[in-house]
Amino acid sequence: MKVLLRRGALGDVVLLGAVTSRIGPCVVVTDPRWVPLAGRLRGVVSALPWPEIPAGEVFDLQGSLGSRWLAPTAARIDKRSIRRRLRLLWSGFPARPPVPALYGEACGVLPAPPPWFDLPLLPRDALALIPGAAFGAKRWRPERFAAVGRAWEGPVVVLGGPGEERLVDQVAAGVPGAEPIVEVGFARTLEVLARTRVAVAGDTGLMHLAGAAGAAVVALFGPTHPSDGFFVYPGGFVQRELWCRPCTLHRRERCPLGHHRCMDLTPEAVNAVIRACAG
Ligand code: SF4
Image (cartoon, rainbow, N blue to C red; front, side, top):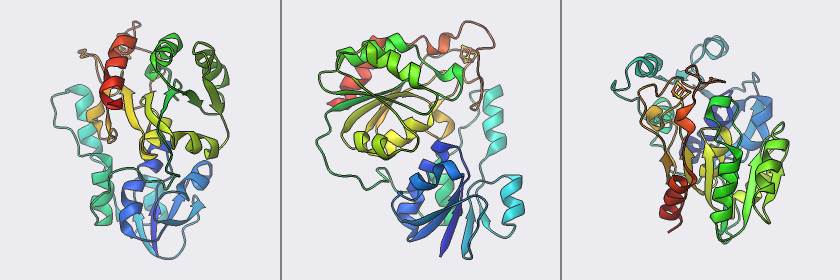
């Protein structure tokens, strides 16, 4: 049995679908929070909590010191970490390949395009708004999410993770008829993503889940950049060309310059990309 190691974060685990779809029956070892979700990726026969590594052919897609210690002889991802860091200093430095290509390189398969979950085939008429993000500098203003929701002619859902209840309710309150969904786990979230046509999100884990579930994704990039290899979904993105971007690989709570202009994106610009995606 093939065994894939990827502890986290959520988006990194969702991206495993590009290789689990191709590699054949496999086991994923991941953070306990992501075990039920990883078990639903196409090709995965079971998911186990880190660090329970069963016997088999092991592929280390975490590529950390901890995973090297756990599986010293595994085939291993080359994350091009130095190249990523150099791009923070000079954005003209060549971008690394997309993450699914790096996973595929380590596993010896060509990555599959999304969707990576087998979900019911339903009419896709909903707009999903995903206003949260683990790090503050990636968040767009809630009232702008609501303005985008009001412009959609169809059902609107507002999705978030535990701890984002107030934010999700705030956005949903600004869109007549919008359904707020915050849950532990992803069962209900995947149900609504099966009928989502377009998802609007910052650079965050639920953005990946929406794309992996087959929605077109309109991603709002601020302190991070789409060329970092994580944005691999049908759809488009909205961003501002600023000299200070990107200023982080992921973890930045506040703008170091104080103005946070990178996320000063207008609802009109976002709606234009939504219209192009929705057809
Ligand atoms: S405005 Fe520039 S420095 Fe501030 S968070 Fe955005 S990218 Fe970083």
